Image (cartoon, rainbow, N blue to C red; front, side, top):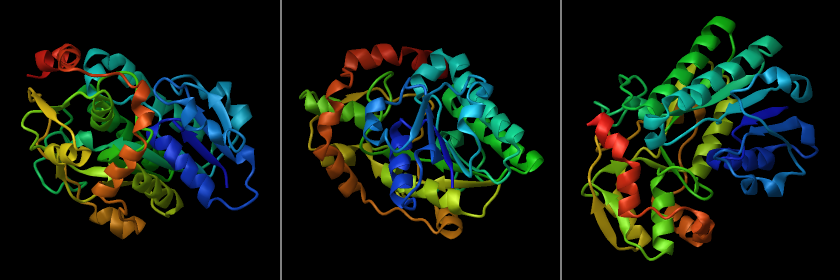
Length: 334
């Protein structure tokens, strides 16, 4: 069994990599696990302790795979997590997001097709942001898609590509629409984005947590270790051309998160294009993947607090910096 992970040094990728190594049979060779990451948002520190067990290539998937094709060979499982995340920078830099999330996905698909490795099962990290402000709660996979900003659009386009390649070229694919993933080793650098990274750095520095709106908006928070298990289940399944929600199947207010973090809070303006609730219907994941989340929100937050030092090097987002960073958001989406 050979594995290829794109974005393997990123937040979800590094947890998936550890899960693969943990469940792999003894004697698996280093060359059987290939990790591609350009380290633009992923961190080498996330996987450095595994370097003797994997074959790592500092590679940008927007490049032509012919550069490394002869080196990395063919695969049984391909997990595609590489790409650009975060809403704010996608509004100002849509072309970069298209190149990473759409062109990069196309390049990977063509690498698989040209190798004629039809046995290779591809699992794609899609985003629940494709639902926009969902009209159905809990949200099923059949809910109409209404992406609100370039990040959501490009992730949706990547999903459309893999499903089309599955139909035309008979490549077995599963697209996992991830809801609000949190946990250790989440992104700490770059643009203003993931809530837990912002909050934990603010807590470390003794600042109040910047809560958007009144804090009563709720999100379907799913722990990254549960997400890693969903990827493994999808990779080992016999499914093809399936789209599956991965979330907790519940939703929790931002104010509840603040209370679990035991911190003071301050309020900043509500932003256009953001849903009041994200809430996944995960019945399909339970039925088709025999998967269900194991980590409770309380356990997950407690685990994060135990590893809060990871966020020491993260940027501190003050109210003033957030206002400046999100100006384009208000200007273009209002």
